[in-house]
Length: 360
Length: 161
Image 1 (cartoon, rainbow over the protein chains, first blue to last red):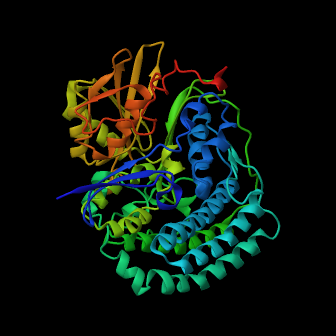
Image 2: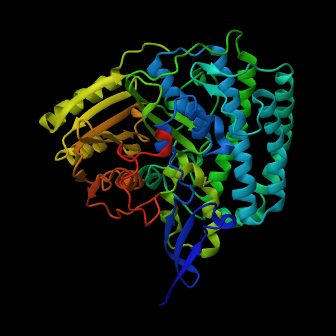
């Protein structure tokens, strides 16, 4: 038996900004060790030196596909400590932006991590084409296509612009029409099914033990979603389902994300219908009172938390940032053990891992 | 937000007090969904085992905090539950205070495997030695980093001037 060491990454096309150190015996992976930190920028350290408002863009940057969830997660503990009650309308606008982000992020994931990693060019084009429509909506609402840094303590920065509602509903109508095509051509495609079904199986007990979150967790049959379990914002007033799948393989993780797009459309329709009139922000002081708080927000990649300690100044004493990708990384070495080297891109892709978010 | 009575939180706190007795310094219900437990480093393992048995099956985060004036480093394990329906909204923060000059404690990774990478992060960022950790190596920092643990307060970055 001869063991061959193989580096997957850290150059970008194969793994994102990370390296997977793989030991192979012939065609099989004996052991895989993720080596991360290539894009570690010390966000937590820098955050201690800046005032809470200046921190917002930096804290949101680690995940450009899912900016608004990191934003909300960072703002929430500050609002808790300040005791600011955010106006209803602002909470609805945040929800609308977050759900648009979730759809865009899942489409992005399906395009790159699902489509490109399995050599499926049409999914790549479909994903990016449809995502474009959501980026247009983002731009209309926030002024930026990604990385909007839109929520501030006390509310949001801008109100819904004229014509937004109509454009959003048009986009949702289109998406609902196009999703069956994505299903037919990608998720139910016999070639993709053959490659992803029963590959990288994460059983329910292992998912719980490893503490994975988001679609990876729900793909293993655990019905957990912070939007339902510990509702924040206005999620307790919205009616939606949590899609799960029992199989726990790579295909079911993509299925869960696909169904989540459908649920996000349901949420968006309700939110844009129910959004009340009123102010979009309340005045909040530029300081964090003494104390500590931790947020729980369901992002596209699972539960994220910001643990923030305030000391009464305008800078946080400590910011601890936990992201879905960092928690899901623990599943990677577990899933890669004993599989064909050819299945590595499929399994790695199905975790929808975002290296920058994990490295911070 | 409705001010529902904290039934679950109080039940968990009471059970923890009864089962752990003198192993914990303080058990406190902070507000809805948040319970704080302070343990000594000698008893952290027992408290963790007990919490795991009560249904808190995974860590959602492990945070280190440096308090140079008080000469301590606090390690906080935030744990929650996937499997017990009524515990899903509860986060227990298990706090352990360590001596800043030589911070060390027994690893809790054997109890919560999800803490594995978090502990490695606290090790490199705060210099906390988790005794018995299966693979206590640097995770995010580059291998040749030889400065002080970067998230300690004595490392100043240019922006702090």
